[in-house]
Amino acid sequence: MRRLRKFWRLPARDRGLLLGALLLLGAIRLGLALLPFQTVRRLLSRLSRAPAGQMPEENAVRRVVWALDVASHILPGSTSCLPRALAGHLLLARRGVAATLQIGVARGAAGQLEAHAWIEHAGQVVIGALDDLARYQALPALEPEGSTLIR
Image (cartoon, rainbow, N blue to C red; front, side):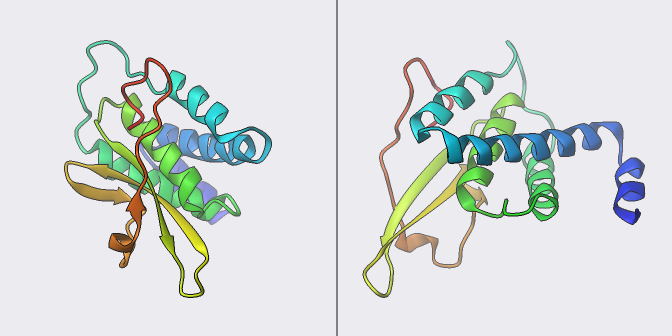
């Protein structure tokens, strides 16, 4: 009940962003479970186009990161890096913020392959920062045809 009261005290703009982040994270998790990764990326690419002439919102990066953090704690199992990075990339793109989706791989201590996804904006990791992020080798971008936003 306290969470609901806290939610209603938020400004309408933040409530909308938080609800959008919750729905998007859930949809991405479901999509990744049911569809090939390329199909999910292609669908997200279509949704990520910002309205024409869209200027980046003031504090958009901070607000999107906040919404994803809160949504990840509310939606069970949503702390995984890939759904968060995909959702963050789309939310930032819709707000006119140029951000780069990175997916990297590394070898674990036992030699197993590990992967991580993160978002960079203006040379900073804004979603998916890790203390040992430098050990991940970023994969080349896999852009769907006509996309300029998923990099």
